[in-house]
Image 1 (cartoon, rainbow, N blue to C red):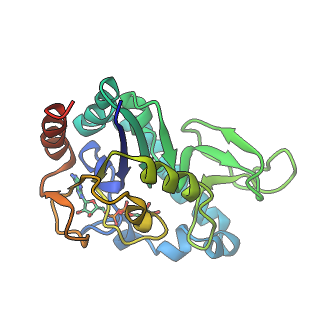
Image 2 (tube, rainbow, N blue to C red):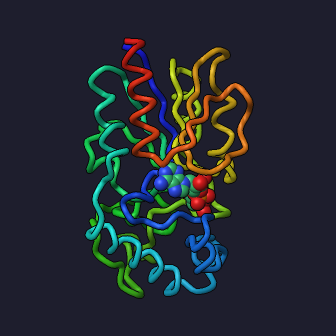
Length: 226
Ligand code: APR
């Protein structure tokens, strides 16, 4: 079976009703990213950070995977698919994707300060002052600005082994995730699905559509190559 690496960002979940970060009215227009999504912000005001993630975690109970998530899960019938997502929601898994790498963490998990103890917490809030087993503050299992991205090495391996690469719903502005395309082997077909202009190299086939419609187009193209 051919291997597909699918790199997804916030636009993948937009049709499910989850805000992106950098679109107009995106999260970073409503919140100061350095106050709610950076390690400095956590040390400065942990309750503000907890509330931001408690709100986003609670939203998971009110949204569903969209057709784009379902199409990606369906590709597993004919291909070996690995999803490398920057998203912290659980919509790829809920749509049926069985191999998902969360580069920036997961809303449904919490961890201790050193990220050595990880807990499944579903969509419940983390209470102010709540502690992990080692007595350190229990925090969202999220990779904040200023923190390492431990899964980037695994993600780079996935991209370097892929026969096909699909990029969906990311502005390609945040590194190291945005640099993953450089690991693609020469000649591997790359499709990019996004309704807006994204700054990528020329040898990428751009489908200027939203995730659901764009992924249906890519799926139909790939179905002819099996
Ligand atoms: N379908 C597909 N793409 C869409 C849709 C849609 N319905 N709506 C918007 N988009 C595209 C936008 O055009 C944009 O290119 O999704 C992209 C969203 O970009 P960002 O908001 O920058 O999200 P992302 O690239 O995932 O951000 C990367 O930045 O703040 C950090 O950790 C955060 O993981 C996040 C990272």
